[in-house]
Length: 121
Image (tube, rainbow, N blue to C red; front, side, top):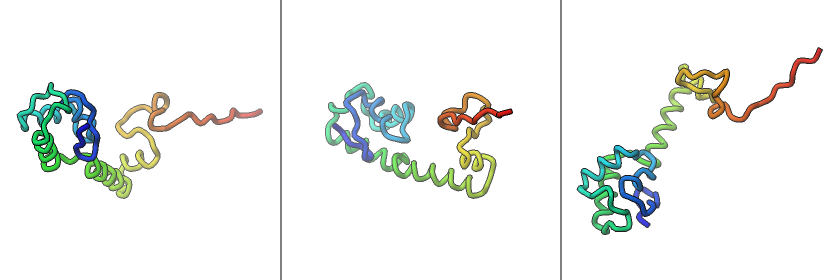
């Protein structure tokens, strides 16, 4: 099992296996394969040590992935919350921030329903 950027890659096609790394999607994976001149339909276990090192080198130098990227994203969100902008307030309250409705269909951001007791007469 190959290990790149601290992630164990499964034995799948290279363009699919690279997407297991946080920060690399399908288009980035194909671009990486083009730059390294490795056929994207080969399997990870079929790569030589030299080809794996070439992939590692390219990803480390040209892409911000895993820990570095997670840190940057967290700092960006923290900055929004610190300056008190609208998006920062929505992050702080755990609500959707891109204009979605919240009366219904916001369960992913809001979490499990909190039932409020009905009004007694």
